Length: 128
Image 1 (cartoon, rainbow, N blue to C red):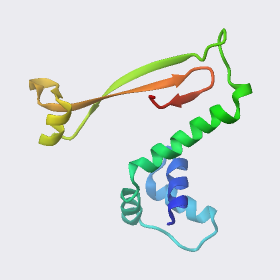
Image 2: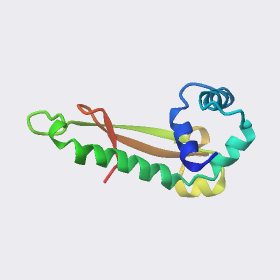
Image 3: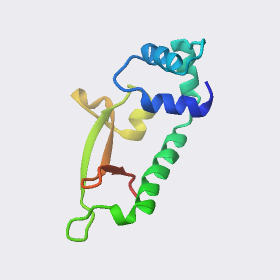
Image 4: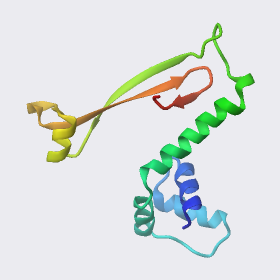
């Protein structure tokens, strides 16, 4: 599956098993080919995470740049909310050293993440 098709497929795969989504995808394209779950997983692993970050930044920044007159504001301000969460990580020594630990016995590596949400425009922003 070419990179562009793979990314499109990943972004459109909502609440469905990978195998069902693959079958639906190839049937929708009218192609008499298929892709196994294993081949899909290998292709997905080859995508660098930076590709998704760049696509995300292009999308959000493009929205703010191209629709400046349509950006909703409250009393002239963009209105944001922040939410944070803890993420359990695999119990691996390098992860424990980098992220620290928490949980019972203070042995579980745990990362923290947060999200900045533009409430009125329904957009998630990257921290600047």
